[in-house]
Length: 312
Image (cartoon, rainbow, N blue to C red; front, side):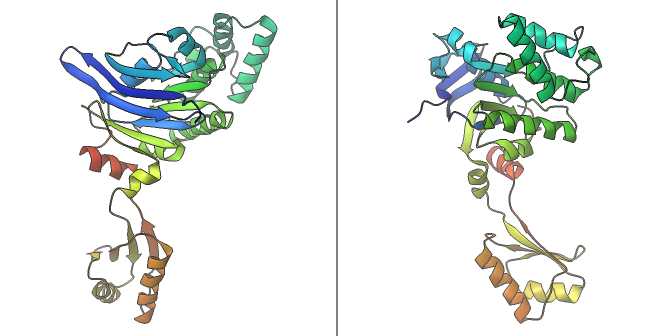
């Protein structure tokens, strides 16, 4: 079996009498996106800080890139990059100067460093604004510059701690595209986020963290299958049609004002075909037909009793 990029067993972190992380176990295969979900205060940032050697654990073992974070911190740091919740750019410097600073800090030879800066500016679509102070950048541009600075050291594992917080939808999707490109190049991404759609779109595996404990792990599809609620929604044009359809499906939920009928279903083709055939047998036709499945918001609410916008 290949060595996982990240392996955590029994991770604990305590502040005074408050247990922030209470025995976390997780494993992240190399070249994948792992997303840690949770509300503010759940322990996401603390987890990133421990895994990236910025904070010492109070218990358990953590190995990143095959190295123990407690005894081989230098080797871990050489293999990783970290982009925090807030863009860590120097606002007095231009975009190009911020990247050159990172090149110098990483000890990259001048010629190679110049090439790296040029390539990163092009990759992140920052060439035109490279000579402007980063203080003039939009939130999305600052986040892109921050991630570009992280890539100067060519990390194989990148921790992204809520990288799209505060970004508009267009900037968020641009960041998603960049993350996918990184993984296609073999980089491992450890992503924390409050945006469940983000995890659903990006992650190979998801873990749900609540009050310092992992309450579920799996692929987005596996987690959604744990939650009942898949249904077919039929929209009718008139009340009599809704009445007739409701009599055909006694377990359905009707909305007389919206003229809709929600019929429990597994969403499979066989059950959908049977449903439509039954409507056809009784000469009924819906104006609209759609299948609705639980999303990660439903999963999180079912597992924790609140949404990710709650605080703990």
